[in-house]
Amino acid sequence: MRVTQSMLSNNMLRNLSNSYSRMDKLQDQISTQKKFTKPSDDPVAAMMGMNYRTDLNRIQQFTRNIGEVRNWVDSTDDALDKGVMALQRIRELTLQASNGTLEGDQRKAVAEEIKQLKEHLQNIGDTQVGGKYIFNGKQTNVRPSESGFQSGTIELEVFSGIKIPVNTEGKALFEDMLSDEGDIQKLITALETNDPAVGDMLEKVDKNIDKFLSARALIGAKQNRVELMEDRLSQQEVFSTRILSDNEDIDMEKAIIELTTQESIHRAALSVGARIIQPTLTDFLR
Image (tube, rainbow, N blue to C red; front, side):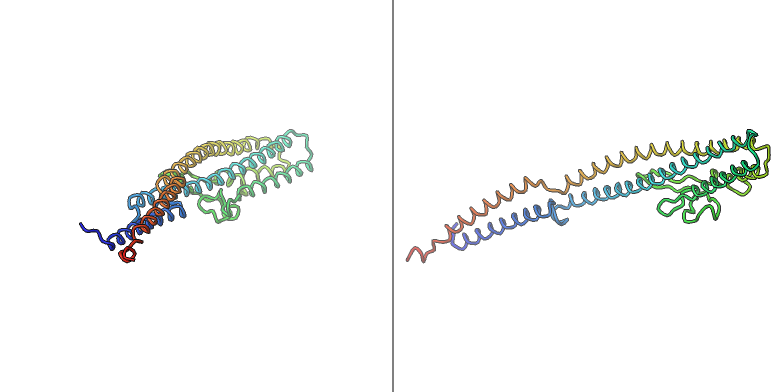
């Protein structure tokens, strides 16, 4: 086969063009730190990347959900703790008033303190998290002390197919106890009227304390589960991020070495091309 000057020129241009293309790809990879910038570069990896990114987004949403669950559970635990403290103070006052040593005015003073504790318990029943009333069932936008306690369970998904109820229904805890005919109001009335049967109210106060303690026990168990789920989601996020990175991210050191190598090859191609093309027939005749 006869090799002409135009063939050498065309080959050199083709090789230089290919070299530029390889350097362009390496430049894109180093600039974006991604193995590919469009699906056509690597369709299989692009499709897998979409799936991995979907998994990661779902895990991050679950992590936000578990954070919301923790807010509700911790706030409920704190509210119940304050409720138990208030009820225990009511019990102390009731026990003090039932021993028969207090005068009428002293009993009324005790009644006034219990009134304040009742209001405090009402405030606890109106506890909000993020503007939502956590003891009012699904009617989280309504103040329970004004409308009465509602029922309903609110659940948040914290993993695929796993939901955790976040709220504690306040109806069983607060409604009967704080109503106008409730246990605390009866106690206040008994103290104000100097009723000798005040001591009989101790049993009802103890029952209310037991309800709060039982609710706290459930919340404590839920807190433990939330911690386990948080740990699991944290691990899953690390795994998903690593898989996504392995699929899409470049090895920077390797890419820089490849670019340096390609630069050397390109310089060599330019040098060889300059030497081959330069001596034309005109140069020879001259």
